[in-house]
Amino acid sequence: MKLQSRFSFGRRRAEAVAASNSPTPAYAGGASMAAAAPTEQAKPGVFQYPANWTLSTRALAAVMVLLSLLHVVLAVPPMFRPYPYPPTPVGVVVWTVIGLAMSMAATWFLAALLVNVVPRLEIRPEGLGVRELFFTRIIPWEQIGVLRAMEMKNKDRYVVFVPFTGATQPEKFPSPMLSIIPALAGASDKGERGVLFTSDVTGFNELMQGILTQVVRAPGRGANARVEAFLEEDAVMPAAQLLLDPLSAIQRLTGGAARPGESTAPADMNLYSINDRESLEPIPWKSVMLRQLPIAAMPALLLLADVFSRNYFRPSVASYAIWALFLLVLGLGELPFVAMVMQSLGEMMVGSGRLDRALRGYLELQTPRALTIVLGAALLGVGLPVMLTQAFWFAGIMLTTFLVTRFVQNMYFLPSTPTMIAAVAAFIYQASILGLYYGVR
Image (cartoon, rainbow, N blue to C red; front, top):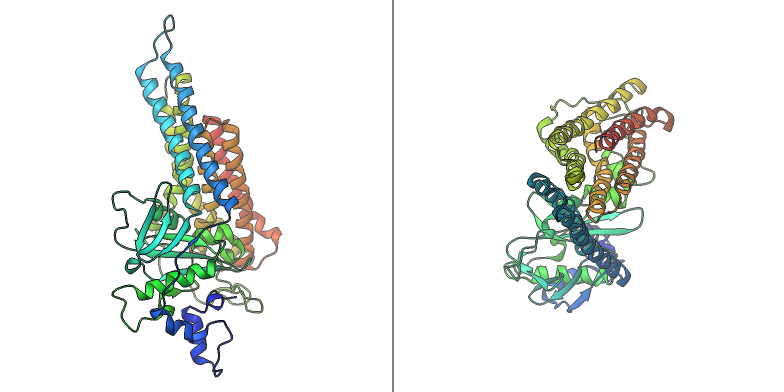
């Protein structure tokens, strides 16, 4: 079910109404709603996620912050032991504080995500209100651009991104999460800010109607502005889709169709997965490896945070910087290695392999593992045993391996047994990085 059929807005629905011979649209409101929207006043209201979601995320964020502070309080004072113990070297104190700061930064980052990922939104005459921890941020209606919506086909849910430009009110308080969360979800372009929410918000239809109505009525939109021009459907938010609707994400990455009854073969492959058209464009290795860099850096940073925070047990930490650099290099090599294994598998089994498609796919399939490493670093910051960090990391490895299996199956139309070659290669490479981290620390 398309989003616009729920509240009568949207580009695609407007085109369908124009092409229909029926004088009365089948959906509530119809074209008259779109035509009347510029002259209507949206009713003010407050829209938020279910109370248990909001309370749970905020309580968990508060507990994480308090535990991270308690961890610092318990870790730092023992280094300043009174006589007759020998004084702790200054270098040990400095590196320990740096390690604690790194792990605490991961904890606070995750806490900020939890607080902001379930926002409370308000429709106000002056703009869209986003409730933050201590105040409500106002985004003027004239600064909001075209809304982007992505349907999660497996659950009939939607993810909506409301982009905006310019300053918000109050201006003196920064809003980094309005840039970070859309970027992590893959909803925004470079440097773009906006509000991200899903259809789990109570009163979702009324919220969308209110936002679109006010955006169309904003100063500078013009007298002939129409609501459907400010809603883009079928937007792609890669990370959000992979986490919330993995089946559709894999179908997109392999070029397959998502609707029943349609061919799932990519546009440049025939029914037997043999290339009908070779890609002549060279692979942009520089941009590909730059995207792989933050994923590869996570295990290295986790190792440094772990070792440095326990530095009073290990006076010399210079060698660990070298090991962290080695982990970084291994992480950078993971993407081309696994992608080439996928390409070789395709050439061996069906006579054709696509390195570009494998690179693009595996770059996204690593997202769950990257999130589990961040979660593990956050647990390290609250002082929990490192085995929990490793357990979450291993869970991410298993999830990525499963996604690789499904990805290769869809890309080459193979049964599960032959795809185990790529799955085992991906698992061994990921597990070797985890094993090296475990051995070095």
